[in-house]
Length: 294
Image 1 (cartoon, rainbow, N blue to C red):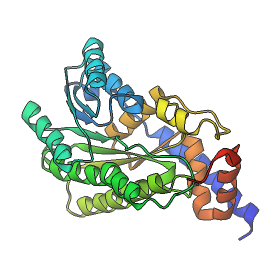
Image 2 (cartoon, rainbow, N blue to C red; image 1 turned 180 degrees about the vertical axis):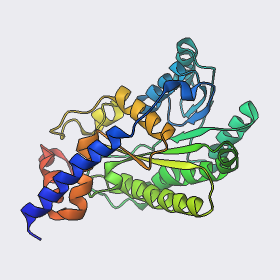
Image 3 (tube, one colour; image 1 turned 135 degrees about the horizontal axis):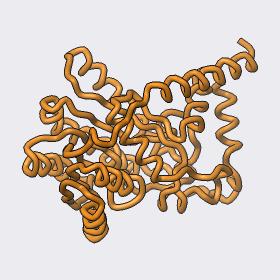
């Protein structure tokens, strides 16, 4: 199949996907009133914005992150915005005992759980891979194994409530993005694990949805600080991104793509024109000569 034909089919697919996902949305904020929700990585960025959206919708919220002072401010703001309740647990997701403790705290507070939004990530770099295996191991613990640990702990409650798991990932966990090898490793792992788990739960008729969120470049402080000097495109707003993630979980979507077109086109090109996608990915970066080998 010729390259132009592949591109044409991919673009048609984007249009059809956009129509399909837009047509089936029927999100009502009141659905989340009094719902019990865990949000990890919620002291800043997308996680913080999700906590505020949930607060406006009247949810019970339990948030986690490392820094207690930041979590305290977010909790206070959530209560001002109308949260049914807002609590926090601070600690590091490098510790699987802490990951399990977060879920246990939710059970202790509420006796159950309706939605768990897994959003936390460990600190990494945007640069040539430097061969540091220990860094990949640490990121796998934070970005992947803690997600699995929390899921195993939460599944009994979520099965009882017919609840939802929302996994926040990245385009770097679906396509080949340079300078992100350790981070991409963990995000590809999430796709494999949660995709397989969803299939198993469907076979078992377990009414728990898993929504996998594939995000592009978002204007969080950490993302802008890390990659703004090499990105040609402008970042998308974190407030809207956070709302789209919540909507996806409530509507029990298989995947959320945000920004929609910016993510949908690369995913289609990945299958139909991978060489073109590799070229466009490299072309989207500027000043790569400034990126130094570690």
